Amino acid sequence: MLTLEFDDFFLVTAYVPNSGMKLDRLEYRVRTWDEDFRGYLAFLDAKKPVVLGGDLNVGHLDADIYNKDAPHVKKSAGLTPEERASFAKTLAFVNLEDTFRRFHRDANGWYTYWSGRVGNRPKNRGLRLDYFLASGRAFANEGEETADVQVLDGYILDRLTVGASDHAPLGMTLALRR
Image (tube, rainbow, N blue to C red; front, side, top):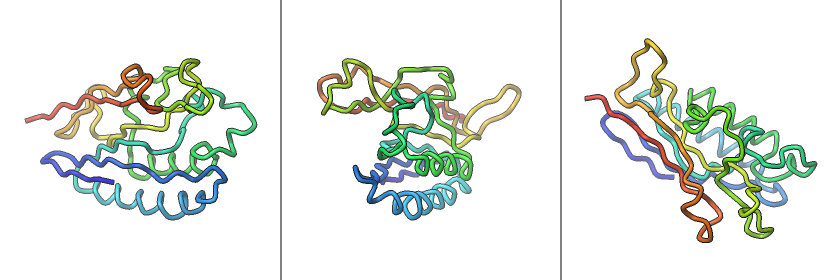
């Protein structure tokens, strides 16, 4: 994890621990890491808006999982009901919003990770495990003033790493009010 403090916001980048193929680290993930990380993000957010980006190792919504109805999904790292609920709890507790979903609410088939072991990328059988999240006050609602930092877009650059990585890079556009 890396935290950068700017005048108007905090930028946190993180690789969230994976629960393991046998889910042997699931309890640690949701009961220790997620709870501590949630508290840290809330501490920062009390001072100024937070932008969090990285491999958060969770497929939050059904739309983030290509085979959401497969029987093994709920037993897979990053996709367990416990991990998904813990992620939702973090979003609510810290008032964070998924930048990609904010601007592309109905997008389907947009993933950030594809297993290389079974050749899923060419078939676009993926998961969205990587995110940019931002404090809710960094988004403008009609007729509402935002913080000094405003999120204008969130996107996935899925074609940049074909053949080079099993993850896609993310992007977001921020505006600073001065």
